[in-house]
Each structure stands twice: as structure tokens, then as C-alpha cells.
Image (cartoon, rainbow over all chains, first blue to last red; front, side, top):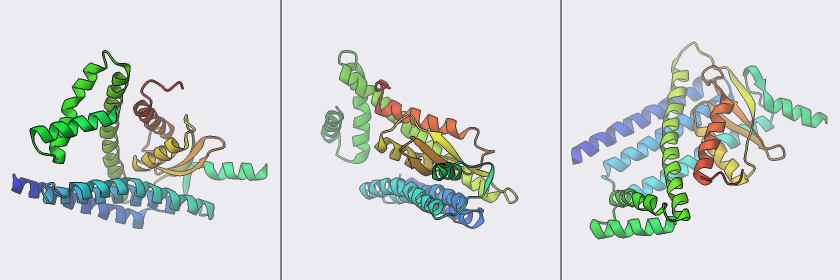
Length: 115
Length: 161
């Protein structure tokens, strides 16, 4: 039982590290600031949560309160940070690279400032 | 009602085993049929049972969404010649409650391919950045689904809307 727990913990920590790596690669590879926030917020948060769950398994459930708190804080702070950074970027005039659907926020801002 | 459930679960867990979180969760789950049965005679009980069901469904669905979001980003990162085709779209929200809008924005950012960019409380519209418009079938549909599932949890009877 104890060995199985340790094994599950290692697997989870490894998976979490893999997701964090993918998130970091995404920050390098994706074209503009907004797409990079996607990668940093989603893959980064999931990676950190998996590592924390791995720590929970590795300690045999003793650290459950710490893990619970840390996961809750991560789930709140990661999307908030991504939202605030991208919103500030848009306000400062960083234009997203968009496909055929375009940038609805920019159009709406133009319309309300023309009025 | 939720305090009663928590208190009963704690008491049951301490009585039968010890107050460790695993036993506590088992006791919490074991007490659920009691509330379901109580719902047959008591309206408040029935509402609470419906809330538990909707909440559990929502949490499972959301965990799946978080995983699929990361897989989505991973696929995008690992496919070498594929550049994402992003867009910023405008999504009207049903609710005007600021706390709910904050919650929806947070949850939205963790689901695949969407990132809450801005919210105009004057018009009740949220601006959402979509990572790849080709892989997501309909952004508005997926956001409406989050809202629908969340509202089923918070207001199981429709809340007069």
C-alpha cells in the first residue's frame, strides 16, 4: 500500500513536471501575448496542481490541508493573473494577432470612442 | 442545510473511524441519500439535494475540462507547422451579478481555448480571446454551457430568471 502510494506520487509529479514544461514551451512558441497567456495559465496551473497532488500521495495524505489550500489558491490566482495581464496588454495597445474573425474588443472600443 | 450536513458528516466520521479527510468524505457521501429521502417531505431538503447533485456534476465536468484544456495547449505547442488562428469575440452573458461574472471569467480561463479578456458591465458583455477558432466548434456555445451548468448549481429552480 505504501509503495503503491509512493509510486502514484512519483507518476503524478512527473506528469505535473511534463505539463509545466509544455506550458513553458508554449510561452516560447506561440505567436502573441494573448496566446502565450493561454499556455501559461492552463498548462502551468494543471502542472502545479498535479505536482501538489503528487506531494499529497507521497506524504500518505498527511499534508492534505496544505495541498487543499495551495490548490484552491492556484485555481483562483492563475486565471486571474492571465486575465489581468491580457487586459492590461489590450489597454496598453498590444494588438492580438487574429484570424478572419477579428478583434471584437477593438471594434467595440473604436465604436464607443467615436460616439 | 449545508452546515447540518457538514456537522453530521464530522460526527459520523469521528464516531465510526477517525476524523481524517478520507473518512470524512466517505461520511459526507454516505449521508447524501438521507437528504435525498428527506427531500420527499421537505422542500428545503430537496433543493439542497439537487444542489449537491449539480455541484458534483459540475466539479467532475470541470476537472475534465481543465485536463482537456492542457491537452489542447500541448497539442498546439507540439504540432510544428501549425500556427493558431486566434480571435477576440464578444459574448453576451445572461447574468448581471458581478460575483457570478467574476466566477465565470475565472472558470472560462481554465477551460480549453478561451481566455477572459474584458467585461463591460454597462452592456453585460464579456470579451473572450479564443486560441484557435478552428479547433473550438463554437465559443459562444461553450461559454453558455459553463453558465448553464453553474446556474444549475447555484439556482437549481431557475431563480426566477
